[in-house]
Structures are given as structure tokens and as C-alpha cells.
Image (cartoon, rainbow, N blue to C red):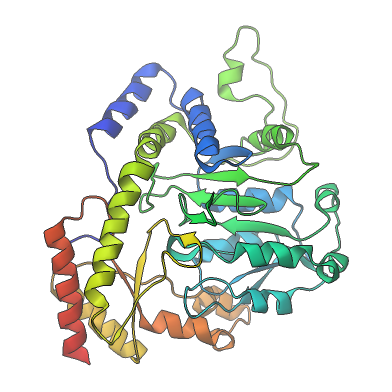
Length: 403
């Protein structure tokens, strides 16, 4: 069976992890700090904070910005549940909007129609690693009529003076838009380094800050570094210094820090990311594109158009003019041919919890249509040329058997 997305675990990573284990320091420490600094340099953002997941990173930013009961956060209906769950955790209301038919990303026109005086944050999602229309989104939140509608309830909100654009960049580490890296495309971006992501730390994530003047990024980093460690004003490394045992809890914080074991994996992954990982993933995307382009039933994903370059995270193939039942049957037949595939995503308004809250997928017809026709194909570093051929053969044969 060809797997869907196994991580790349080789001797370089093993050696780096062993080095960490033998160093005497396995929790948040020097390697985590080095990883943060190298992400900042890679993305050219202003500051980076490593965390234990993208989910916790998103929630930490929402709480830092003061999002709470009575507030609204706009996000696409086509995303993973984590994007919406963190809004609920803060006591705010997720406001879903539909997506573009061509790239799965949030529809900017729909965003504008959804903005109210309660809107505090817009959370675009870079589906499959392809950046959203950030030029338009950034212009939107700066329009005078939209700015005038904004109500700042906290000092941070008043300092920004407008809606915060918080990018869910879980898929898009290393992607580009107009020659700028993700992490610099808007106010704050949050990356995921989960086991199935292009760059993995097993579990983990990072918050990339790119806030405008007059925000002090060193000050924000120091505060959030405290917030993600129970509100404790000294981390474990600082407390090991002679006579430095005493600490204080300055806020009821959270437990969301990254460890040096995780960061050690990330350091190796980052070192070879641009020149190796992304090159291989693009080769796979190009092979799939070139193979399926000759079939009239294939609708291919965008991944290098409109000044945008994907991180090649998910190859989201769509089959034209099929029903949900036909899509599911095609998937079943592909699995019968020893090839693992997936679906990204079942839109959040379709999930039981969100349906119980009154959300209806029929209000997001583009998202519903994309979901019913989408099949995600295997993309991972060790996928061989022979396996890529097996994948495409399995898909073609299965589609022909159903249609």
C-alpha cells in the first residue's frame, strides 16, 4: 500500500535528536530558540514564537488580541475544524464565508459582506499551501469605511485600530506571494509542523509576527513566551541559573511551548527545506498535473499562478460532473488498488457540532461542491517515480470504472 503522507525520518534527524537527548536539555531551551531565529530569517518576518501546535498558536494570538464573547471572527467554510474551534474556545462567534471555486481559498467579496462592528479578526486559510488573496484582504481591512466600523475594546485592538488579519498558514510554510514569503504576507501567520506537514517537528507550530508600527515585537514575544508557559515569568532554562530559582505567575496562562526535542527535528528539516523538500514536492505536483491534464474529467489545482507559489502541500484533484456518491466510490476503488488517498476537507459547517449550532453547508455552495468532488493524492518526499505512476494509474482506472 502506498501511504498518503508519511514523514521523512532519516539519519540526519535521528542524529540531531540524539544530540538533544544527550545534551541534558530536552524541553524548551537553546534549540527551540535557534529554531525560532532560523524561521524568522527564512520567512523574513519580524519575530517568531515556536509553540506546541498551530492550533494553540492561533488561540494564543486571538487571546492576545482580546477576542472574546460578543466578538466575531471571519473564516472560510472550507477548512479544518481547528480554525473554527479556537474561536469557540475564546467565546467568540465563527462567521463562515464561502470560498473561490478555482483555488479553495476564502472569497474576498464574501468577507466584505460578512464584516460587522463585531468583527475583530479575519482568518484566511492557505488551502493546500496556496496563499490567499492577501493584497486584496489587506487593502480591505484598511478601507476607511471598514476601519470606521471597527470597535477596539482592548489596548491592543485600539493600537492596531482595525481588523486583525491572522493567517492560518498551517499548510503554506515556504509558499510565496509576489516574491514575499508566507509569514510576511499579513499581520500574523501561524504555521503547523504536525507529522503530515511538509516540514515536521512531529507536533508543533510557530507564530510569525509582521505587525505594523508602533508594535514592539520583542515586547510581544516576551509576553507571549510567558503566556504559553502558564504565565510563568521565567522558563526552565532561566531558572537553572545560579540563585535564579524564584519565579512569579503574572497571568493565568497556558501550556503551549515547543520542546528542544521537537525543535531539533525542525532544524534539520528547515536546513534542507527550500533546496530539497520543496523541489521534490514540486516534481510530484508537476507529474500529477502533466498526467491528468490530458483527461477531460480532471480539474487540476492551482499552485503556481497569479504571482503565487504554493508550498505543494496537498494535490487536490477534482473530478468534474460527479456526485458525492461517485467520488466516494472512486476513492474506495483507488484504495483497492493499494493506493492511499484522502479528502481535504469536509467543510466545518457539515460537522455535527457546528450543525447543532445552526450552521448549514447549503449556505456555502462552492465549498459544498468542491468537497463532493475532491480527492487528495499522496505527496511525500520518499514517493518514487514508480509509485507516482502507480498513483496516477490507480486514479485513472478507478475514475473510468465509475464514470
